Length: 207
Image (cartoon, rainbow, N blue to C red; front, side):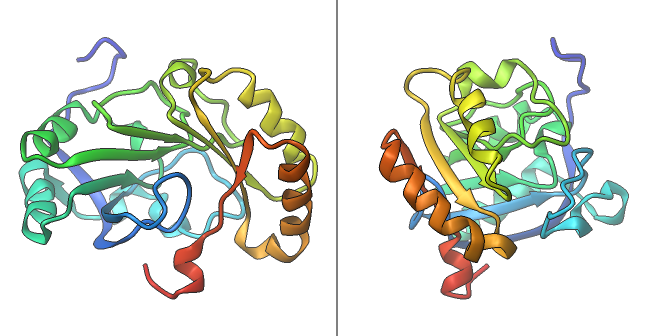
């Protein structure tokens, strides 16, 4: 067991994995190997990968196998996403990737204690399950998905809790882009510490 009470794991359920270009947030445009872990207990009703929620529906792969995918692709960065990746202790996975010379990024709601050793932490809190307090000081990027106008005020609540160097992003929920994008553009113009994030991978039709 770890200090957080999580079991150290050497294999993980993987829904999908692929080499692509990061489409959103601070690292937009960078070549990244994505590993989407199965399992999520947050339950966003607008989630576009609900098939990831059931961990038992996805095959298990060892840390060595996951590392080998990225090494074979010659990927400089790996993004661990989900689902909710912090349902699992990721210390061994990130150590393996970094030992192979690969930088490690994570995309998480922060709903579980932070584990793993990360070169970049994208923290995207959700209203459906409160974040664990360990995430706020560690986050490099706060990315708020804006589904309703009220999410802008909610974004400020979380921005007040992250560290002073954390980058702040507002991203329209894809199905609500037509309604939310004008609001976000106006908000960023009036509150320039925030930056607009778009899901550019969906515009250019890549994974």
